[in-house]
Amino acid sequence: MIDFKNQAVNLMSQIDSSLDIGEIESLIEIPPSYDMGDYAFPCFKLAKTFRKAPNLIAEEIANKIGENEYFERIENVGPYVNFFVNKEVLAKTVLDDIKSKNERYGSSTLGEGKTVIVEYSSPNIAKPFHIGHIRTTIIGHSLYRIYSFLGYKTIAINHLGDYGTQFGKLIVAYKNWGDRSVIEKDPINELLKLYVKFHEEAEKNDNLNDEARSWFKKLEDGNEEALKLWHWMREISLKEFNKVYDLLGIKFDYFTGESFYSDKMPRVIEELEEKNLLVKSEGAEIVDLESYNMPPALIKKSDGSTLYITRDIAAAIYRKENFDFYKNIYVVGSEQILHFKQWKKVIELMGYDWAEDCIHVPFGMVSLEEGTMSTRKGKVVFLEDVLKKAVEKTRDIIDERNPDLDDKEAVAKQVGIGAIVFQELFNSRIKDYIFSWDKTLSFEGETGPYVQYAHARASSLLGKSNFSIEDEVDYSLLNTEEEMNIIRLLYGFPNVIIDSAEKNEPSFVTRQIVEIAKAFNRFYHNCPILTEEEDLKTARLHLVYATKVVLKTGLSLLGIEAPEKM
Ligand code: ARG
Figure (cartoon, helix red, strand yellow):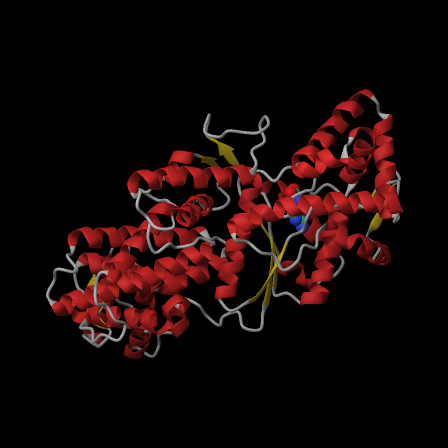
């Protein structure tokens, strides 16, 4: 595909050899609206070199470059040289590229030979997988897809919270009040109940806390009974988590949770000792981070048991040694920012220069719109319930709007779950947001169903026509504002994907496809297609095809399906 920005830079550099290509590149801007051109070069900086007013310089440059095959107009407005892309060349390069690459349009080899680890979801055993966990699961999965699309070797890790003192508590609770068969019927809930019960009872009887500590210590020391119980709780919980992942169509390459690192910690502790980083403090061992304005990292408790951060240090070292990552990404809520800062600092202090390739990607919290969510129990909302409810609600909407649709069940699932996923990825991730059913499931506005609907509409248009990808197309016919708007957005799509990886921000992709869907609907309403004379009809159908392809790719990068009909 032609890189028009690059062409503008080349033209600029050709008219005056004193201009440095890198500098031109960094100065070129995209004007706020297209009537000011597709690219603009501000001449303020040149004023010094040329000892002339910027307006005059801009005018001279514009005149010197004149017309050429890529730009239909180059003119100055005040101190800016404005470049207007040749519409036919643009339409041709974009649509041809999409037709030759199809669903790979926007993919790249940028990441070739580099490994990116994306760690996401990582729920805790015996604590519910709730609406808050949905964020890490969905954002992480999307990043995983985006990096893969850009050619990186991508590894998805679920760092399950399957270790730590809560297991001591669970074992004690189970031994006192648990019933195996009851738990196996509804593991997540029943284990949670036990966990809650433990805390209630421990309020009254502090001995329980000592017992729990000692059971966790036994677990760390490989006690058979402790190991057996732990293993069982982990297995039954994982089975439940997998139901949610299946609904979302999400897979992991590894379920290496905290427990995976239990035998990898002694080495870390030795290493910390050797490097003189460990300090004794009230019987515990810590890394002092005072000079970095952070509380100490607690590495080992006085009873010898290890902590969350110890396991995270071991995990990072393990990943570097086994995967030699280019980036090691952690999609975890913003409430853990301090934890990841301390952790990174410790790794840095250990002398690992790859610490800088470890990236915490935080996100804001979800809260629930008053009265919108039915809950099984108190304040906790279970992700599985939310997903199922979204599918049910979507089924009702389809029954109302399109009762004769084939395969209603499958479409309800694709649209209902897609709606939830889309909503999660619409706002920039760090923002807190309020979940609302009405907003999420609306077929209007900036929602998943709206984009999926635009895709289905494009698909049905193509189905009703004699469109063929081999058609001879006269691209000069695509010149209305409606058409150009879509073409520009399609043209921008590959760069949006790159930016979204750079900032670890899937919402860039979400926003772009919403804009494409909006532009497409405007086009659909204002520009007749099937009733036009042959050449124009063909050109427009090719635009419809390109739109359909890009919407589908965009949705798939978010982890959302694109039904052909809905
Ligand atoms: N299990 C933790 C939680 O749900 C998240 C784990 C995040 N990942 C990590 N490597 N610390 O709160």
